[in-house]
Structures are given as structure tokens and as C-alpha cells.
Image 1 (cartoon, one colour):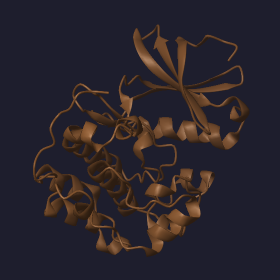
Image 2 (cartoon, rainbow, N blue to C red; image 1 turned 90 degrees about the horizontal axis):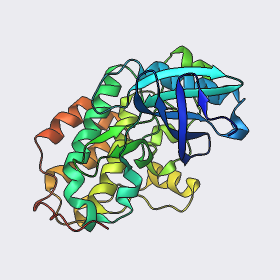
Image 3 (cartoon, rainbow, N blue to C red; image 1 turned 90 degrees about the vertical axis):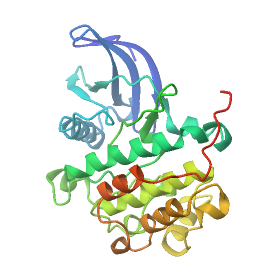
Image 4 (tube, rainbow, N blue to C red; image 1 turned 180 degrees about the vertical axis):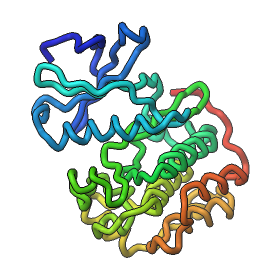
Length: 284
């Protein structure tokens, strides 16, 4: 990147690079606060679909002012570049936390799961379907275990203009967490998000994903055809009620799942996840 600033924002350090976008740690001289700046990767900086996806993420994010969802501050285009400016969340990716193993993070699980369910309940309550839930779109504060939803590039509101503009049948390729109806190109409501979130919860609570296909085609077959494993058979320390909730949320047919993510959140608030609470162990 040949420049160090855009508008009132200074670029400090690139902190992540994905297939479509990169994120920089920055600073707003106007607000006098640190910010995160998301922009297309170099080879896609003129790609209309990526630019419109970032614009859409900004528009969606401006609807929320919720403690479990990242705040959106600004969207600007300057000198052929596109920037989405949002709240700087100095947390760690959930993906990194999970990579440490269940014995290390198990004591964090209850708080993380409750926060994630709350974030999705809020997100869905505005009529949006996330469509790309995975450990990559959540960040965790290692001190408090507070967890936030930080990304919603693929979100849609059924029959909304954004759906028509960006392609309603397009699905992300993170197949480990996709609901069966998404794989078939049919997912249109929050029950698909419920399935995906339950897949993440399964992995968080057992230390392994529910399906372990080595590629997208294998995972698609498993999501469509293979029964959901019993989480308490993998981790006997899980309660029967939590195992039952996971099974309900991961039913192959959307009609057999809870109808709203708010129902899932309410159930989790009253539910024990572990029979014996995991002990806090030394950090790696």
C-alpha cells in the first residue's frame, strides 16, 4: 500500500489478509480513537462486487448499536481505493482460541456461547440472515471472554435489493458450517444461521467439528446426509439438555429447528453446558 492515510484516518499496521479483504489497525484523528479499516485486497480493489459487499456491510452495521456486534463508523472512497472504517476490537479471533484445544479454553465456553447467541439474536431480529457464520467472524476478549460478531459480508434480507445485486444464490465456501438448505441454494431465513451457529457450538464444546470432511464436496455430503453426532458421546461432560439443543438446531430440515435465534439465546441463558465446569488452566 503506497499511502499512509485516507481522510481523517491513519493506517498503522495490516493485521489480517483474507481472500477478498484486508484489515488494518488505524487511528481516527477526528474521533481520537483507534479504528479498524477494511479494504479490498490489492487484486480486487476495483472489483464491483467486493466494493458493493463492503458498502452493504457498512449499511447493515449502521443499523446496530449492540455490545456484541462491532460498530460501523464510516465508508469512503478515495484515489481509487475503498475503505470501511469500524470499531477497533482488540480481541483475539475465535479461530485462534479454538486452536489451543478444549482443555485450554473450556472454561471460556459458556460466556462465549451466550454472547454469540445474543449477537445472532440481535442480528436476526433486524431481518438479516448472516449466511456465513464461522469462528472467523467472532472475536474473543481473553480477559473477560466477551465475544463479538465482527463481520457480515454475505448477509441478506430476503427479497432485498442487496440480494438481487449481489446474487441471492451465492454462498460462501466455508462448508464446515453451512446448513443443508444453503448447500442446495435454498437458505432464506434465520434457521440457516441457527444451524451454522450450532455447528460452531458443537466444535467449541467437544473440541472437534461435527463433520470432518477434507473438502467442500465431502462436507456438503455430510451436512446433507449424515446424522449429527451426539456431542455428549464425544465429550461426556456435556449436559443432556445442551446435547439435545445442538441436535435440534442441527436438524436437516429447517422446520425441525427452533424458529428463531432468540429462542436459542433464551434457552442457553437458562442452561448448563457442562456437567462439571472446566477448570481454568495456564495460558499458552
